[in-house]
Image (cartoon, rainbow, N blue to C red):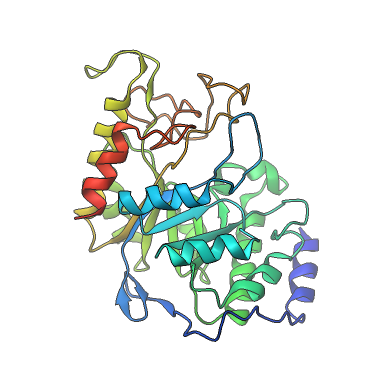
Length: 335
């Protein structure tokens, strides 16, 4: 992991000119105690995870961005979370024009594409840090579940994470730095990452994540948000009165309870991202059709069958038809 230190030290000396955006006022996003603030006003995330891969493909595409943003606005979504940077200015402009914010996430090793290992993530930040679509920056996605990616020691990830967060702060004073952690971070993760301003937690605790907010309150005084939460629309077993097979009611009922739990704990949590916007036919088999199956670490808490059928998580299907859970978000997020 010594190469990380060398790269980050080198990149910190590189000055990359920020892209100009018509000389408008730049939003300032900060944190204060347990709150996320946008221009000094509390900001509550009513979000969705967004990785739009078309049917038959395995690559993300923004070919349906106009339709997607329209659906998001209808559902009351104010923030989207992406798993890799959006390098198309026209897409960021459309997100901003829709009145929606985006959290940009950077991966550790993405073959040099705006990633942490190469240090090129800071190039992206300096390129787009003045764009008002950006809410804040997010480093990694539940990497604590994968020490094998870091020479078998998750502390190597925490070291790179904390140093990368500091580098961001040196280059951008207007946006906080976050990380998406799998479940509740332990004392080692928290003490190793003092440069993280706000913590995202990927949480699957059946249909009620309330317990994690009380746990968070005991271990940290920083803001927190659920970077992933929700349910899929396929039941692998019959349980809790929900039948086997595609079951949009099970998904809708679970998401309704999860969102309620977050809203009821708004003094601690700064919102959530429902996973996810669109069904992902690329995840578990043939991308031309919707397959049953798929697995994710620590996901046995998925309601109501304990099985994360990876291709059935959307609030809309691959053809942009609304599922029952879409109306749950529409009702609760627009209140």
